[in-house]
Each structure stands twice: as C-alpha cells, then as structure tokens.
Amino acid sequence: MFKYAPVTLPYLSIFLELVEMGLFKPKTDNKPKVETYKWYEVESSPFQLLSQEDQDRLTGNFTQLLNSVNEAVIYIRNTFDFYEYENNQYPVIITKFYFGTKENSPGFFNMRETADPLVKRPTVVYEYPDKVALSDGSLAKVLVVYSYPDYLPDGFLFEYYGIADEIFLKFKQVDQYKSIKMVSAARLRAESLLAGSRVTPEVERKVQKLRDLSMTVGGSARLFELYLYIIIKGKTDGELLEKEKRIKEIANARLLSVDVPKYIQRELYEFKTSMTAFLSFSVEKNYIDSISAGPFYPFISEDLIDEGGVFLGISGSNSPVVFNPYSRNNYNIVILGETGSGKSMTTKVFLRRLRKKMSIGINGIDPENEYVKDAVAKELGITPVFIKPGQKLGLDLMRFVREGFIDATDASELIADLYYVPQELRPRLRRLFVSSDADTIFQFVDELKENKAEDLLKYLDAIESPPDSYVYDGIPIDITGNTVFGIKELRNQRLKVVVSSLLTLLLQRKMLSGKQLLFVDEAWIFSEYPSVLNLLQEVARRGRKYGDIFMYITQRPWDVYSTPEGRTILEQAATAILLRQRAAATEVLQKAYNLSQAEIDYLLSANPGQGIIRAGNYKLTLQILVTKEELEKFSTSPAI
Image (cartoon, rainbow, N blue to C red; front, side, top):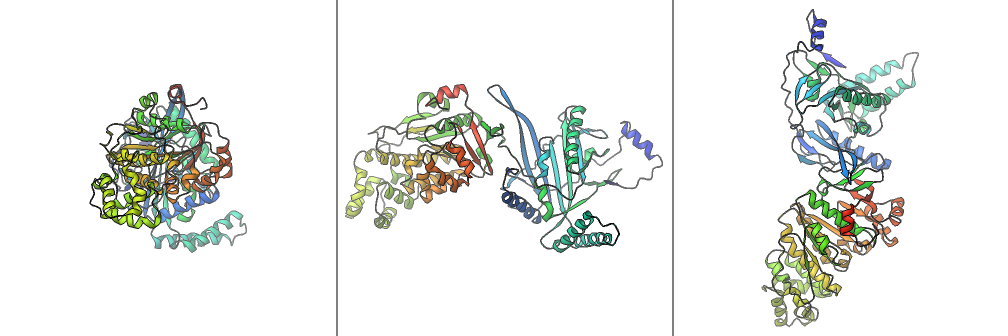
C-alpha cells in the first residue's frame, strides 16, 4: 500500500518499537508542501431516489468536470449536531462540499467561489502511531482506500457520510503520452493471460475493459491518479474504534480495501500524498479513467438541512427540514396552496423564524390584511400600515420615474395596463410619456390635454378623479422600519392592483439598501396585468445582488402561469413550497415543477401544512410543524 524509501539502519525493528512506545519521534518536515488551489463550494442534491436518467446526467457532468481540470481535490466536511424543536431533538448532519482546482471556475454544479476551507481545520498537536491529537481536544484517525473492485455503484461515497467527519478525494491527471503507454502495457500483460489454459470470465472482462480504455484514453477519456482518505474523529479511543469498525464493514461489503497506516497519520491528516522526510513515503497510486469515474460522484445530500437555516418541519423520512434561502442560486420563493391548505400559516411561521434567525427587514403587500393584525404584526416585528379609501398616498408614478425608481418605458407600459389602454394606442402613449417634461403624473395628463390626445385621455383621465387621484396626490408614506401594507379596505380590485404596484416601487429603494424581504400575498390579482408581474420580476432581479428575498404567495397558480411574466416568476424561483392544491392547478404544477403523477395525487389530498418543497436541486415532502405559541398567534382557522 505504501512505498517507503530504503532505510539502511541495522536496528530498524528496534527503532520502530521505540516509536510505537512513544519514546522516540522521528524528525519530520512538519511543513506540508504548499498546494495553491482556487476553492469553490458545491451545491449538492439528492441522488439515490432519482431516475436513472437523472443520475446519469449528474455522473456525466462529474466526468466532464474531471476532464476540464488537470488536478482537483474534493473536500467533504460533516458536522454532527442536534436540532431541537419543542423539546424534541433531531439528529442532523450538515454536509459541506468543496472543490479545489488550479484552473479557473469549471462551471459545474452551481459552484460558488469561497475561501480555503482547510485553513480553519484543527491542527495536530501530538502524533500517535495510529492517530493524532488535535487542537480542539479531539482525536482523529485517517483511513486510506487503496484497492477497488471492478464494480462500484454510482455515489457509493454517500454510504460513509453518516460516519466520516471528513473525506478527501484527489484526482491528478496523468500525462497523456504516459497514460497511453501505461494502458497499452497493461492491456498487453492482460492479453498474455488469454494464452493460458485457465482463462476465467474475470480475466476476459479485464482484458475487454483495457481494450476499450486503450481506445478512449487520450481522446474522450483522461487517466487520473486517485487518492481517497476517510477521516474519523472522536473524543475517546472507543469512539474512534467504533467508527473505524463501521467504516471497514461498509468497505468490506463493497470489496474495498481500507487500512489505517501507522506512523504517518499527521501527514495523512494534512492531506499529503507524498513526502520527503526521515521516512519518506508515497501513497500507493490507484488509477481511474474519467469515463469510469461516475461511482465517485460525491455531491449528494438526501436531506434538506441548510447551514444557518430555519426549521420548517419534517420530511417524509422524518428528517428535519432546515431551510436557508441564501443557500440557493437565487432568493425567490413561491408559496402555492388553496384556501385552507396552511399557506398563510406557513408564510407567517417562516417569516417569524427567519427574522429571529437573521438580521433582515420584512416588507409586504397584504391584500386581505392577514399580516397587519396586531398579534401577527407584533410577532413578525413589523409596522402595519392600513390603506384606507380616500387616503392620499403620494405614489406619483412620474415622480418615481424622475427619481430613478422605474424606467420611463416600463412606466408607460404600467400605466397602459392599469388603465386598459388598447394595444394600438400604446406606442403613441410610450412616445409621449418618454419625451414628457412633466414632474408629476397630473402634469403629464395636462400635457395630453394640450396635445388634444383625446384618444388617450379617454382612458387616462381617471388619474385626475377619485379614487385614483388620491393614490398619486400627497406625500409618500414613511417606510422606515419593517413595513407591511394592508389594502383590504380598498374594495375595487383594479385599485388594489394600482396601489400594490406603486407601493412595490416605493419599497424598491429600500430593497436596494440590502438584506430586505418583500412578500406579495394573493398575487393572483396581478395576473391580468403583465406589466405589474414584470415589475415584480424586475424588483426581484435587481434585489438579488443586495441579498433581498422576494416571496410570491398565491392560491391560484393557473392564473399567474397564464402569462409569460407570471410563468417566469413561478418557474425561476429557486424555492417553491407547494401545499394542497385544487385539481385546476395540476397541469400548471406538472409543467412548472416537473411533478410526477404520484406527487400530484399527494398534493390533491394533503392535509393542512403538508406539501412538497422544491429548493434548488432538492424536492421532498414536507410537514410544517407549528409551535403552540405560533398556532395561538397566527391561526386563521383550526385547520393547521
């Protein structure tokens, strides 16, 4: 397994006994060879329950990833913890995946550049023959995998994630000329066995595999040196031995050869593969071609447990669901569910727990005054603002244009949608609006009168009359602090849409200050107004770089999905929480979220608070768990 440099000491056996007793420690160069890698955090995903087609897609991407680099290291770190919910403790394993390479970003698996994850690892303070003591008070032992069978299932490393504290995997590409020469030599040696009298099926398989490999190495396949270390930690020797036993049992079942090398545990813990010292060594090399590397696909996590996330409930496997919107590639969330599905409770519980977990502002548009009730507002830490008929709001669209809240062209489309301007008149409205010198929307209407634009005034003169004039007139509402607008008292649905869209523009400036959340409830009311949906989409897009979260909540996804703008909102949100649905929603959900018929059937019969969460690459069933306190404060019905 390990190749040691020749040692010409006549008393080597005595020397090794002294080392074993801890009475003599060989001098070693404790400074590891400095390897400079660019590090990326990798987004993991479920794997075991995927279709064969989806598994093949992931392992195929992994093959392409390896082919794109000359050298790569994969570092997997597990944190074992407990999550407590109402005096119940759930064991959780938070697994982080890192990819290090000397090349630029490979562009696979939603990799995000990150700092070196090895810097903060506990350091070795003492080395025993078969383990090391670490600076955090724990013990560590490194097991090396040095022999592999002909067959391994894809994703086999996942079997060790519940036991190992760290896994280190290194791929180093062999020079193309050398790899062709090595494979050819191995093929010739294997073919010579065919001339013997006892040719087994195993020999025939190996020969055929080498023949196939000799055709692809140097072309579509690359040959790599392969190193795999499994690191276990514990407070006691007993804990280490128990973990070691379990690791070896799993390895033996897969016909993997695993060992704990003595006297070089420090070097292995520091992820060295070779070293020059008093006893120089190199880990025996294994080789693998990139096409056959699928079994080593490592980026697997079957449970949704995001570091620093909020507890939502439990999955179908009874594992806790801990969700952090910032772990996704965008921070947009949609919550879909029919009346009585627990949609409102889910939203309130999430907002409450998110506010307690993170420093984030909460803002919202509340068409049914669900969130501005005293008890709810207090729990969410928000300032409720009730919009009443006849109240002057100061939401002047032209002022918003002048202040850079919205582009003039987009504003003209918004006005056209809100006042039902026919398509044939919209180009003219756009030209007049964009070229206008008006500072207020009322001045713009005056300009239309001066230009005798009677065809446009037929639709836009409502701007000057109540109730619309109250919307534009006055001083804008103070939105300092966490602000949620309750607009239930505005009985006219079109007026609700007008006010909601302009309030969204008002909140946009605040969103650009960073770390804000904006939720829009009963969002189906915007489905007839494409420009409003486009506005919401644009606010979400612009806010992403500032760490803003956008939540879109509706009971009628089919209405929203009926427009290209609404379809974009539903499909491109990184996170969707799907609660009980009406039959009318099934076709939309199948198209938007690629749900199976079994998943659709589950949503049609789900109890309140039950559903499916799709977060990035994850898709699993979910039961929202609500505390007694939350139930008392938030419940709108006894259902959930």
